[in-house]
Image (cartoon, rainbow, N blue to C red; front, side, top):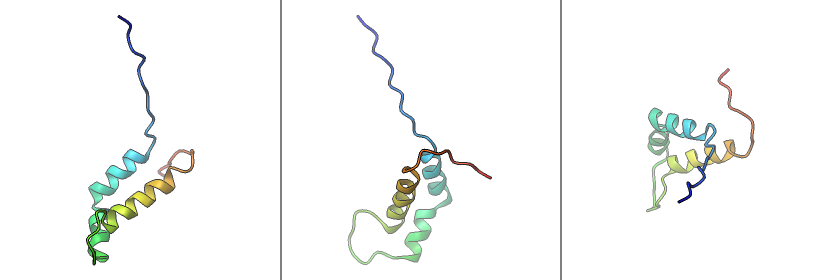
Length: 66
């Protein structure tokens, strides 16, 4: 029986940014400012967070905290 090759996936900094935004309550704050007027599956806060993560994913440079 052969051993399967391990699969390595790089998440870079997007997972950290997403976790920080959720811990800080950014989607909830945006939803409080911009209320939903229709029944959509995705809230305004979640859409905003997705746009931030999408924009950060288009470049391959590292994220620096200074």
